Length: 521
Image (cartoon, rainbow, N blue to C red; front, side, top):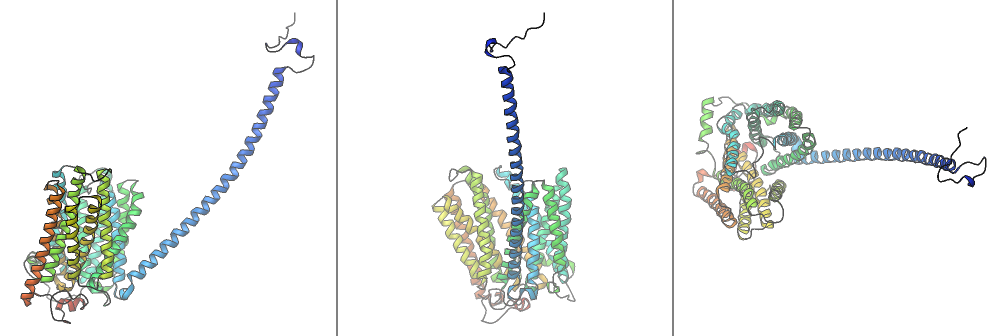
């Protein structure tokens, strides 16, 4: 018997005629038709999507090109504006403009170097035990152990080749940055010594540069304003270097150090191309090496005019204030937070406020640098005393941020004024030693201020009250130094240094540096 077609259970045999398709066949046909329709729709959608993607790609490419052009135009406009600023008032003719441009490169390299090591050997131990923080403070003094007794005399002895001395400090930083890139990757124990060596070269660069500023300063620019231009260049270079190093640093600390190497090499070339006026004239009968070393040790007891000593006391007070605020608030905000924010966030706001104050101090020095350095530093000291008193009476977010802002501005302006007074009133043959000694003195004050902030009890009224009293003591000491100089004409500085002399009279150092009477107090 032949096989009998059995209809599916959902079909009734009497429901279809002979030759007609079954229900299942009709359903299969409809499914195939629907599938073909879906396929056609999918193909059309894919075509439309491809066209849209292509259009979006072209739009994105146009946007990227437009953004690149905009950034390029902005960079060119900013560069042209900075060069106009750096070369204004005769700075292009004297060579000060080239020094300012070199400072941007050097600071950008410093920023890349700092970014690479900010989370390792150079990280500030916030949130750790007080003993570990004290060790960090002592470590910061390591580069200054060699600065005053050795590096200062070396720079003074070879001041007739200052361009090469500045270039050497940059080249050493470039070499050490490249070496550090490999050491960091290997986790070598030599990372800290090499990093400290780079910091020594950084301080030697700052000392040599400060000693050469008077030689390239145009007559229309005072020493305070000339130093302010270098501070503005430093701020710009640190910003640019940080922006470049931050994305590069994500690849690893070694890559940021390699970026620092490239920037330092460019800065080295810029240093060698500085004008010959940066070099002091070669003189016969230079001091012997041993006499030069003995002179560096005697700087603390002799040779500094009363205005320089008073400014050094004021700047030391500013440095001590900076160290105290940094470390005391690091522990105080942990113990007694001011708002609902985390203590690290609050400390970050304090650091930002201090940075803004530092920038404002640089711009204020450039704008008001025609006034007496003594008056500027004394006025900022009074403002700092007022801010400390307010914080003592009212421990709040706004008062702490105000104190941080004033601390940054005070520290920057006091340093600018001190440098101007040293440049105007110090003999060229000992300028580098004087700057090296003053840098060591200021760093010591910062460490002492930070140490006091570590050991004091975490009571805002007590801590900030003692801080205010210390600033008042600094003011009294500076006034006594100046009054003593009024009673002793032999100790008075020149007009350029801010000393109390007859109008129109300059010191010998002031005449050599061309300081003029614009800085007279």
